[in-house]
Length: 311
Ligand code: ATP
Image 1 (cartoon, rainbow, N blue to C red):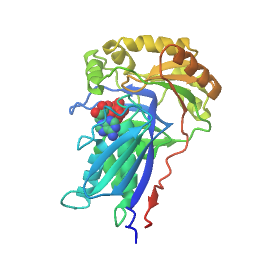
Image 2 (cartoon, protein in one colour):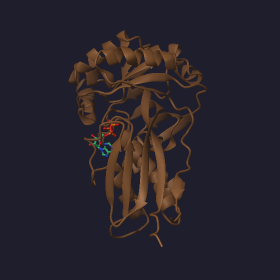
Image 3 (tube, rainbow, N blue to C red):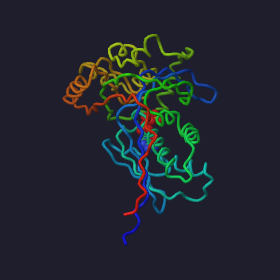
């Protein structure tokens, strides 16, 4: 008789962009409160957990994975350990974590957070008895400020530490190109630069006039001038090459070019899918490697696929 097939669970979570990102002055703990328009994009991190003799992790996919730690520094690994400790399990956890990575690494698109979210969704099924979803959400918030949104997906207004999420339901997707950078930019350094610029305006609590309506309608023309990123200027000061990329994306015909989160990925917004393809072709001719995608307007399906059969 052939040996039992290892039990596997597969789950996925999307990368995100911030259509709007307003950053407040750091609080006593050094944390910057945010007002942000979180939006999932159609680039998915797929995580497969499989029973294995010990805890291990691998990463491969459509983007360069060379910057991804393959050990305890990986946020997916931390998610597994955090869940084991919440369940009171002592000793090492035995499973392999296989990440299929489709979100540019360290690009301000929360690929690592999506890995953590997908791992938590898979663990929910993998653990017996299954974990309560509220426990999963609490662990997500501890793992990182983008992880609760990655778990939820779709579209949401985030406030404070990113844990306070108000889901919104756009009627139509937006089309865009994602332009990964060939250089790195540290999120912590971008925030330090932001702090150094001494902007102390209090953080707004609501999106600007017209933003939500344009977002809900998927109206790229109306939304383009309202898109906003408080981290764009500090990121550009640290990496002036970003200014060139923004200029090139705009020159390729984008309605609006914008740095994604803390960068260094740049986004170019389009009228429709065909327009996004045209922008990507132009950028390709200039030596960029753009990814054409669209926003995902439905929340994540909380239904990881499970393989329990023996073969
Ligand atoms: P952040 O804004 O939180 O810095 P990001 O969205 O810009 O994140 P990520 O792809 O999430 O970028 O990775 C940020 C850093 O986290 C990487 O440079 C890497 O060292 C580390 N890291 C840990 N786990 C992962 C993971 N599963 N995938 C990618 N990077 C990871």
